[in-house]
Length: 300
Image (tube, rainbow, N blue to C red; front, side, top):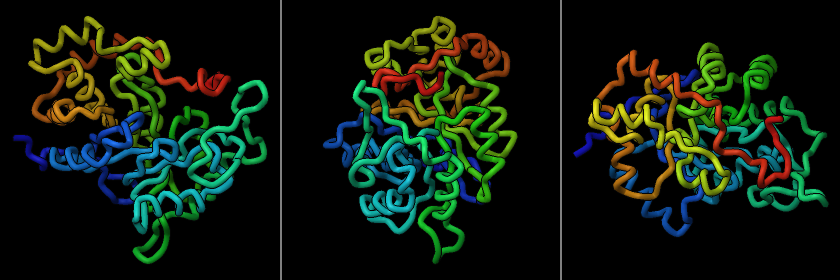
């Protein structure tokens, strides 16, 4: 039986501890969410990730693109869904504001006549960040969130946010896995006291291969060779690699057996030599790419 006490944490720059492993919930069927949450809590998970477009509000929430001009209202909307008084962590989901139409938390994306994401050029990232700062949980009787952060920001945008921030960002949520290691961004963030959370830490596997036509690192022969040495699955090797980089990993699955498998990564350690070997499989390959949905490449 897995001991819940084995879950390590990382201390954020506001003194709060953040579990280093959590379940991702993007594309999880809404009807199965209740059972999923019950199961993950029983297994020992205490870190839950979601976003304004996932329709699965939990303890960590993200501000969606179309709500950049409505930060406070969007946060309050999330809290109403959660039936909570505050959030532990609230992140800017993408460094891009799209046109807002309709109510907060329900808008999704808006597109122009050519099917391209309709970007709002009147709202700067600095304005959005200062609105985020107004939410911060300074004292037990003030504020809507305890800590704020960013998501899908590169080195340049992270640097800018550090320059104009009054409340220091705690987390940068990015895609990173053995095929997309992004060492420069990870090191830069950590150097400045920002913890990196890895969404898509397994490279999206079959789901992203179907959705984006990407290649999965789970099929890499180098990683497969390590399974025999450590008596662990490829998934466990990849998650352990991420944890040893001091990144927080949030793999997505609704399978109870896989949730248990993902949690069972704290009883072994990858050697420094093997960490260097894994470093060599990097392909700089992004697997989670919104270009197909948005009609433009936001990373161009």
